Length: 499
Ligand SMILES: NC(=O)NCCC(=O)O
Ligand SMILES: [Zn+2]
Ligand SMILES: [Zn+2]
Image (cartoon, rainbow, N blue to C red; front, side):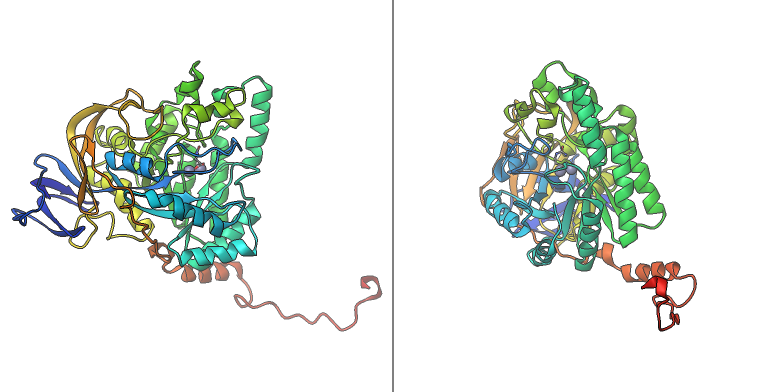
């Protein structure tokens, strides 16, 4: 297996050989003798890293994301994962969506469509309403390998929850030791701004950008964080796209909250001006929510990643091809929201973060793989190159340049938001479950070889929360006995004006 390369884990990097056996890393060290029949990959002068883990994808997603049209995303679990492997991602966590609010029915559908998988995957479950069955299904799903629940504060009328439902969801997630995940935007302000923007004649994709100013994301992020503080539950903020949201997360962490901030490659590696392109096909592919913002926001997101305020880089790969995007030809509110990224994530992040010296290769491994494995409690099985860990490994050549294009990518998308971008650094070999699945620009994958990775609840993020609970109870009872109601003599007969 990889010989002579520089092994890079989140904590360190060192020159070593890696021996793989039966899908696991057997040994890591210098001058190891490769067992007979084993495949040797010459990694001299290259990096050998844990396979990427993308915690935010929407394959075979039966939602138009804001467009309300029942549109299915262009990549299914076969094509999306093929693209992932070609880009060095060896596991992803997809968002199972409820069917008419029914979590159990939604999860059954996703288990079926995932059968065509070629690599390991997990699931989050989205919660889009609140009732006793939702609360009960959340408990059942944690027994089936789901340890995180998604709440959208946007997409009114389809996926959005209100504050009361969010508080219920936070409380139930905490009870279960499951991580609540939030899409943060202000739904009411969005509806107001979208209507006013459309009425002002901005019906094209640029109307999407105009009607989702950063303040809506900043407010939604602050609200989600404060309600998580109220419930005292760890919280994961998806696709942070604004500098204000980065600042809200930094403030929450400073006051002691347990927050995982997620960036997405498009949030710091795509050109926000393209949504103004006169060609609808070009512009519409950049419609995602929250929108791709300007270079100053992108700078703050990169600083957040380099400085540890943001912990993870994902993609939010929600691929809708140019035909699907035409649902909003005359009304930007009907354009299915989403961009590609599952194949480009490592390349764009390396080019934007490592090549300019903002982060080290070890930081890169942490952001792209290790922090995801730790957040979702599958470390060190995943996210590490060490004996006993899964043999999900990539060989990365930092010297090779290549150009990103829909004409060569492995997604079924007919567009690519990074079209024509030249990047320095490329995944040249991907090993998944101990097998070489990507080498010399060729995939060698097998439908059905993918495994559903059950994600355990009550990971490290939930350790010691009760002590915090006790402290917040005490701080709410500056007088009297914490937790004890005050006993008063209210007399026995109500006065006549009280009757
Ligand atoms: N982000 C986006 O525009 N589409 C995917 C759905 C979501 O994550 O909001
Ligand atoms: Zn979202
Ligand atoms: Zn998403």
